Image 1 (tube, rainbow, N blue to C red):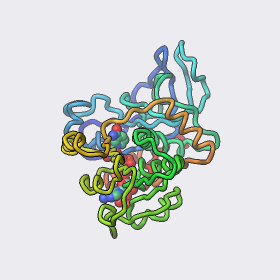
Image 2: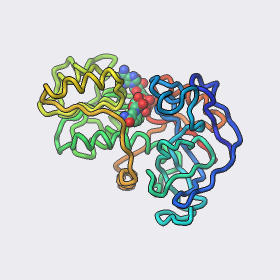
Image 3: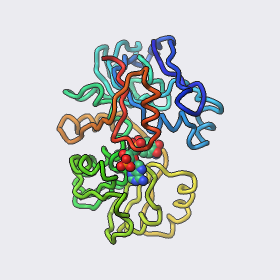
Length: 319
Ligand SMILES: NC(=O)c1ccc[n+]([C@@H]2O[C@H](COP(=O)([O-])OP(=O)(O)OC[C@H]3O[C@@H](n4cnc5c(N)ncnc54)[C@H](OP(=O)(O)O)[C@@H]3O)[C@@H](O)[C@H]2O)c1
């Protein structure tokens, strides 16, 4: 089968389209014929080994799992002997998680992995725009346990996590403010944000407004400014916090009446099933910026590397 290997950390020139053996499912695994996947900000960060810690976790000179890609959207072609949850022909979407391997024509995933039936009437490409952002957004928003009428600010509202966080927070009854740049204002409003702040014109930490929840999805807001803009007992959620911020927040947390959450997300099949129901009831939609073929994956990584994608970058594997 065709797959893209990351042969060395660094630029997109180290991504090679290769022929490798098609995997076969173990006893409790399903084999998925991938129709669409995504190049996520996570894939691009691993390829770049950014931050350096990635080398300690995923391999020193190159990723041990050389085929990157976590997002899966496709059809089950075969199942292992003991698989009960899925059958051949099921259309599924989800995440291959730390096994990676989704930048390929086929991948195997445990039947107990982060997998759900694909929502009816959603294309494979649209479905590939959901798992990465939705599981991360849901993970953090669950921590804040948003109540009806609470004021929630989503910083980086136009990215993969942000576009889904705006919709999920709105769905939980929040009054949502999205922060993005000028060209994304219309899109963020269309996703349901009650108010949009253009970060190129206004600093949300300096306008006197306060919030019950501030979710920085891209790690680019001011930590102290965000804390100052939180109401008492408010939650600061940080999807992308480096070591400095992690240590800083651990030090200040005991001394403030505000809660700070960061760290690595946990994705579950229950989350995917919950997300599927929201999509089917029209409450969550996919945002796709650009679509590429597997052969064009270097272009897709280049686009993601710019840090300004709108929602998701999709790789279409089957026409
Ligand atoms: N904690 C975890 O386990 C976990 C899980 C998943 C992802 N993450 C991390 O979460 C981060 C976000 O992921 P993502 O995929 O959602 O990112 P993304 O889609 O790549 O974010 C792109 C968006 O960020 C916006 N942006 C760029 N600079 C900005 C700024 N200064 N202020 C406000 N918005 C800005 C861009 O909008 P403009 O073009 O308008 O600037 C663009 O729409 C990544 O660092 C990823 O590694 C962490």
